[in-house]
Image (cartoon, rainbow, N blue to C red; front, side, top):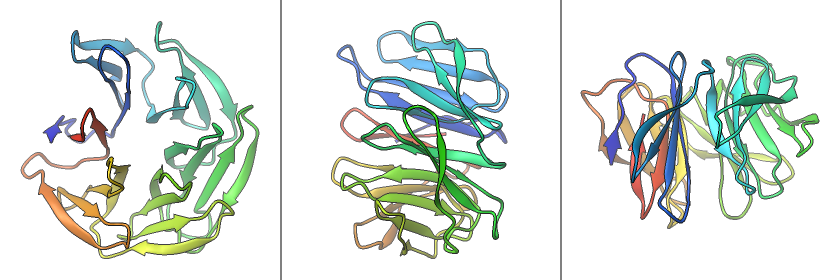
Length: 231
């Protein structure tokens, strides 16, 4: 795996498979969005600061969370336009299902922890306010359509398509970014211990790697044949 060190900044990664090679996008709290191409290297992509998370839908549209809005970013020009409003406070992570519904995790721990669902037209609804949510950070779907949420309390919660929640894994140290590899293992990066966890489909977690001394990390992504990048 490779590391990008943003210092104390929050940073988020996503990737887009393209015929010429995968393209990786990185956002941070004060540097806009950067694009990394295997054949062209790094380029400045979007000047809009404050993006939280980056995700593609299955039509190739790029989305981000910015304050109380979901933004759609043109992958040619880098121009961001408003897609949906009404995102709840303290939202960081999102995931997009096969029907292009956007799920957003928000909260600071307690009764207000929520996962919202925005349909493909940007209309919001509440997907879950499960008590198993505890300051959720990132969201990720598996191939069966189950949704996973990382919590600051060291747990990962799994939701079925109806929103029913169950504890999937526990005992982690502040898991942040979530991503599945090609064989169905879930990976989580710790913002506290500088460790990357690999979690099998029964929820058993092992330490895959340590990022020490690179510091705090927020996000991870797989690019081309399970190469892992961490920010």
